[in-house]
Length: 158
Image (cartoon, rainbow, N blue to C red; front, side, top):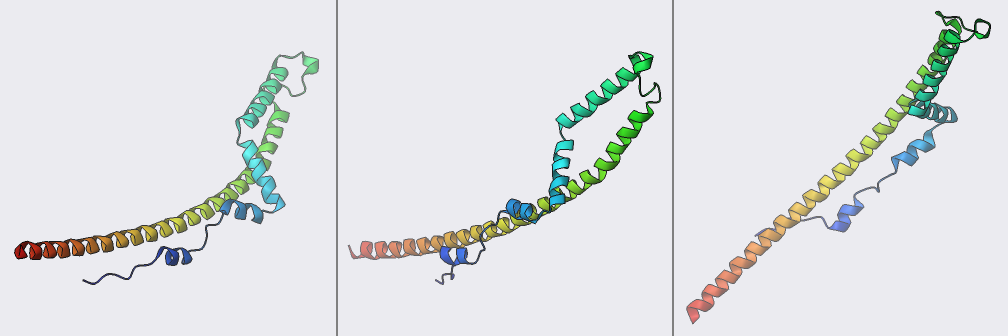
C-alpha cells in the first residue's frame, strides 16, 4: 500500500512567516495630523462630548430665553450667535471625523488581511493534520490485516 509523502510539522512551520502585530504597524505609520484626527474622532464620538454639547446648548438657550433682557446676548427666537458657533463646530468636526473614520477603515483592512493570512495558515495546518490521520488510518488497517493473517495462519497450524 502506498503512503503519501507528508509534510513534517517543522516543514510546515518553516513555510510560514510569523504573524505581525498590525496594530503596532498601523500606529507607526500615522503622522502627527493623523493622530490628532483619530484623537478628535475618538473623543467627539463619546457620550462625554455629547453631554458637553447638550449642556452648553441647554444653558445657552435657557439663559437667552429667560434671563433679564439686559443680560441676554443672543436674542430669542433666532439665537444667531448660537447657530453660527454650532455650525462652525460642525464644519470643522465633520472632515476631521471623516479622516478619522478613513484611518480606522485602513486599520480594519490591515487586521482583516492578517486574519485572512492566519486563516489560510490554519487551513493548511488542518489539511496536514487530516492527511496525517488518513495516513495513520491506512497504516492501522494494514497492521490489522497483517494481524488477522497471522492469527488465521497460527489458528490453522494448531
